[in-house]
Amino acid sequence: MKKNYILDTNVLIQDEEAIYRFEDNNVYIPAAVTDELNYLKEDYRNKERAASARAANRVIRNVLNECMANYDGEDSENGIVYHKENGGSIHFIESYSKEYMDTLATRDPFDSEIILTAVYVRDLDEDIPTILVTNDNGMANRAIARFKLQVEEYKNQMVKASYKGRRELKDVPGDALLQLLEGNSVPLDELGITDASENEYFSLIGDNGRFCLAKASKGLMESINMSEIKISGIRPVNNAQRFAFDALLSCCPLAIIQGPAGTGKTLLALAAGMEFLKEGKVRQLLLLRPNVMLDDNDAALPGNEQEKIDPLMRPYWDNLKRILMAQGYEYHKVNNKLISLISEEKIRVESFSYIRGRNISDTYIICDESQNLLRKHAVGILTRPGENSKLVMIGDPSEDQIDNPYVNQYTNGLVYAMNLMKDSEYCCQTSFLECESKRSALVKDVVFRIQNEHLHGLNGKRN
Image 1: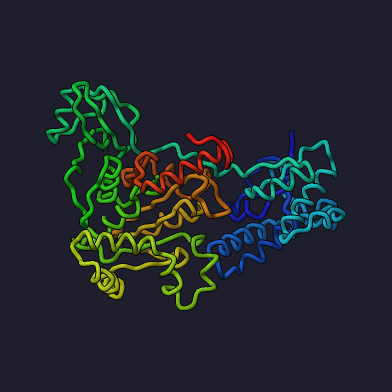
Image 2 (image 1 turned 60 degrees about the vertical axis):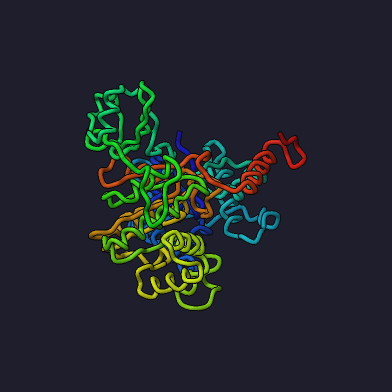
């Protein structure tokens, strides 16, 4: 059955080609959407969002050009209509149910007009299901509660974070485990493993009680020895960190590491980057964060690009100071050493906006908070490393760790990259579990109480 889909602006920001992805159904682009895109295209606070708005405008312009080339002089109550070959259609509609505007008006008139456009289209023909497509929960709640509209999230780019990059395997034959512990490779089929991804990590527990950390590569299982390793003064404290160090230090040009706060993801990545720098494997350590971390403050801060973003990169600086102290630098000399590394451009911090279109060579690149990337921006950063560069993407794709209003736990760039690069010989990826997070007793108690509050309310029972 044919359906009407009214698209919110955030759908086109996330995927400018979304208007083509609704098969043989009717897609409606409200005038408020084109107005909002026109407003966002010059958003100097968020260059990536502005670029996405311009990309969406180009797609819309191409469709409108085709409409006008075939315009027969007749107007439609559904606006300018583009008829697709599969029987679907794209409508650019000016009309909306204005009689409700006074009661719905908010500080965001774009949202109000988009909702009322959906009401208008629904009321034209109630026999055709009409669905508002938005990733904005607040807007969805208003549309449902006020007008009983059917609302859906944009699902085309949804991917579940199912691949973890590591697993445990029990009852491994003792003789095979012994071979691994002696430094020999063992064919995966001898271990009964038929579904291993390339560069997947394994905690192997033998039927004789022995234990080994290993990685699958090119049909073989190979042991990894990270128990006594010390990188830039930092030692791994658990098996998850040993897997992470292997990924960060490997010759693979891409490492992806995901997991909750407190697991040491950023610390380990910086330690590995500093090791590459010290050994002369790269000429620079480049530190990135997605623009959403900077948007609200970037324009208000004084100074040039570097001066604007420095205060917002404190997690990097805190960890770098810890690494330098672990290397033997006295506390009062750490700042001077860090300043020296930055002034010599051995360490460089940049906003994600400024790497678009570049080919970055001889550099260890760390992109923290990657869960705040749009899918297309993840593609952008994955294609930036040049000769002799390594890219590290780290983050936590949990819903409560996402600050970008245009993505969620299923559509963010980190999850997309994890699934896209699964089984690639050029990528090592692994993950941390919540139980592997190292937090202070106070923080653990706070987290426990917050979780208890969610379950039982603020005055609920605490065990």
